[in-house]
Length: 64
Image 1 (cartoon, rainbow, N blue to C red):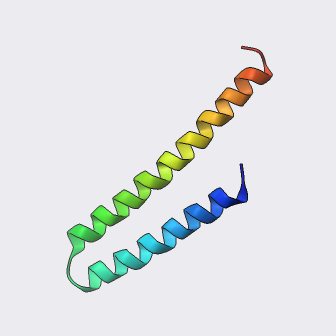
Image 2 (cartoon, one colour):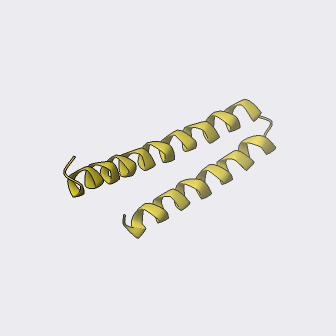
C-alpha cells in the first residue's frame, strides 16, 4: 500500500467536504447528500481494490 492512496483519499475527503458546505449554504441539501454519497462510493471502491490485492497476496503466501 502506497502513501499515495492515503493522499488520494484525503484529497477526495477535502473536496467533498468543501462541496458539501457550499451546497448546504446555497440551500441544496439533496445535492449535498448526493455529493457525499458519491465521494463515499469512490473511496470505498478504491479501498475494495486494495483489499482484493491483499487477499490475493495472502492466498499466494499460504499457497491456498
